[in-house]
Length: 135
Picture 1: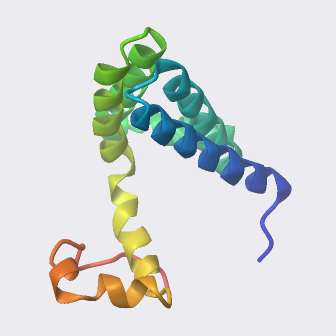
Picture 2: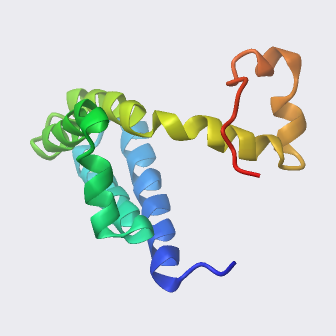
């Protein structure tokens, strides 16, 4: 299946957003890099799943606490409180996207090099046992 060009751009924007956020954390919570990373990440998500689906995802009732924390963290980062904002963002991110982690780990277990590493007994203790991957 081919990925549409808008989705490819979205994946790139999301990857650059994660890169800039990581760089911002490594450079002792640089507010500018974290802000750029947040904006790129949100634009990438919107490009991947579409603006309407993004709005529906962030406004679902069961995800409202995560949305408030995530967007509040972005607001704090943009308001030059990067440490508190990033902590709040991480909490919101885990609430919003926590359901996807078993799917990601299930995919990673099928990869040639990473799969055997994740199947090692000392590491598999920390991995989710049940993955909701579609076959």
